[in-house]
Every structure is written in structure tokens, then in C-alpha cells.
Image (tube, one colour):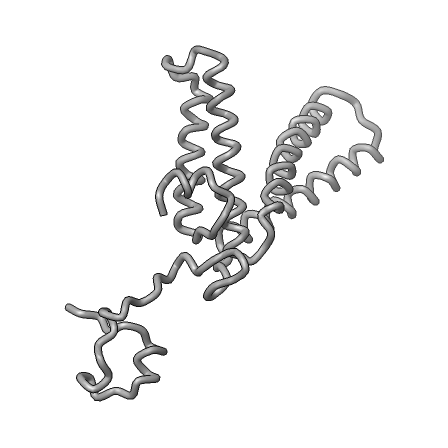
Length: 175
């Protein structure tokens, strides 16, 4: 898979390893933007970089969800929940430390914080830890498996093994 397709296309599937690699790269770029590198003083360039980061995040999340056999539209929900969490915790800590809030509203804020944290935890587990669909699904072929080439599978007669065992076990490792 070429990098342009990996980063910008919403079609296909990617496995956990590629998804984690892209997410770590996005965090590194975001940190560089946040630290305000001397090369990024122009405000419009910051906006272009931010939009590109969001696009790449949405595209790779959609493909990771495709690997889990889920619709890519859930990537938009993941983005909204992430941004809502940032806003909510900003509001929660701002009210908690700066204003007197009634007990009922404080309880609702705490319940919302717990609900959003549980939802964020499930999203993290779903995207980073759970394996994708084994074999092809409605979004494409399995990204962890490449189809064996006919030249990789030796003839059954040379190994003295029944044909059905060769296809089940996969190609023979050559050393």
C-alpha cells in the first residue's frame, strides 16, 4: 500500500500495526505544531496542517474500523466524541475550580465525565487492541495476509504431505 492511499483514502483496510504507527506519527506532528516550531509562524500554515492531520486521522480510523468490519462512518463519531471529551473536561475543570456549582449539576458533570471516559476507553480498546476480521470482509482483503503465490507453495509430491495440509498450514518456510 502506498503512503498516499494509506493516509488519504477512506477505502480498504489497515491492521493495528499500521494504524498505531500512523497515530504515533500524527501525535509527533501535533506536538511539533503545539510547541510552535519556528518554521510554523504563519497562521494559515497551522490551519492547513491541522486540517491535514484531521483528514489523515479520519481516513486511517475509517480503514481500521473497516478491518473490524464496521462502517467507516463511525470514524466521524470517534472524532466528535474525542473533541467533545476535550471540551467537556475543559468545562468540567473550569467550573470545578472556578465557580460554585449546585450539587445536582456537579453530580451530572461527574456522571458525564465517567460516561465519556468509559466511551473513550472502549474506542481505544476497539481500535488499538482488537484484531480485525479474519480473512476478507465487505471492505476488502485481510491486510495481515498476502495471498500465497503459486511459486511459494511447493508441490505436494516433493514433501510427501497430503495436498489439503499444505493449503491449511500455509507455505513452507525456506531457510
